[in-house]
Image (cartoon, rainbow, N blue to C red; front, side, top):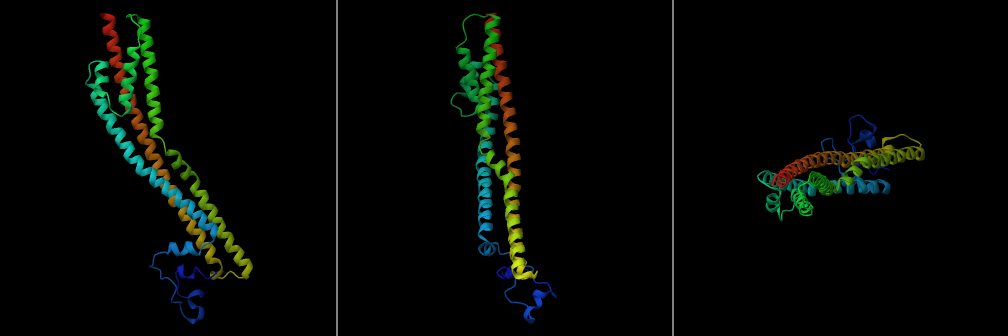
Length: 255
């Protein structure tokens, strides 16, 4: 039960400092960093398992962050270029030619619109034009929905870590405090050397839970905001494509 004494600061005048008439040389001074690795090695196996789970959660958060930084930036860059290119096009067919071969939601939306116009039945009637507009709008929404779902991949991991990490850490906290009470019961004393191991383990795993949960919440919110911005960009692209389609239909009706 004295295995964590080396991790505890010594205050002058305490029983721990006066034990044996002198301060133990193994005790860590106040300014020294907390030896986390040594504490984990000396902790109960339940606390070690909980710490491992929280470490894996933090690793997953960092992994998602690294991948999402590149993915979201690239998606936004491609979408801005595609939107600028389509805005300069005079017809829907011209927009499709400009975006042909590009890998972005804007190019997929333009391609879907061009395909739907190619399937349009002959005749400049108002019913045909209304049907084409409705079908193009449906296909554009479908493309945007698929792109949004693809951009949101990985956010479920962030949400899971953010929601569960504090409770996993709380389980380790409860276990450490329970160990302290069991030690008190077994030793029949509330001496610091008896309660210190369990309390140290409880505080350590509580900190791990916060370290895993807080970044997960921050990254999750950042990803959601960025995806919402990209969704708005795809909505702008859909408006531009529908405007080009409407102009093409008006020209056809006037021909």
